[in-house]
Picture 1 (cartoon, helix red, strand yellow):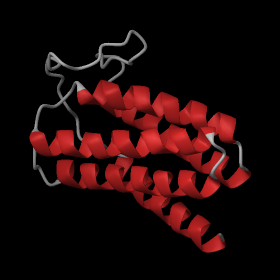
Picture 2 (picture 1 turned 45 degrees about the vertical axis):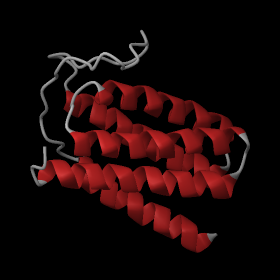
Picture 3 (picture 1 turned 135 degrees about the horizontal axis):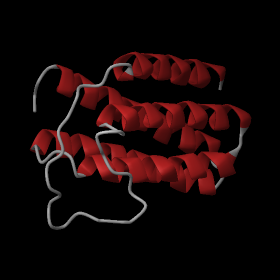
Picture 4 (picture 1 turned 60 degrees about the vertical axis):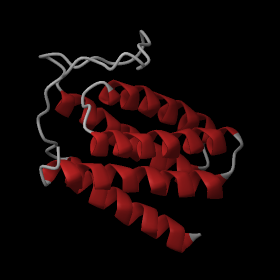
Length: 147
């Protein structure tokens, strides 16, 4: 278990480094089949994409803390908030590669929610690892200009 926690810790540190200065992004209209929940955050001039990416980083740190303390209720709540932020980002880009990355993020986050509700620490840990891996892959793609 200690090795798993060390691995997760290093993944978070790596992810945090990638998220420190996310690329500025412009908002394009949502595809017709995208969910438009009222609780999905909106990108505005005051709350840019960088603002929301910082919120996702805060949530990921809180999820790691919940994993280490076994606080499954908070973990589920934070993962559900992360899911709302992910839906907001899904409205931003129509690029196929970006959408694939967002799908990986959504699936990993859904698994994190499912395992946290079942109080399954091993499953939640694996899902969290997959979630952070999807974030690193997406930010790598964006930095390399594969938009």
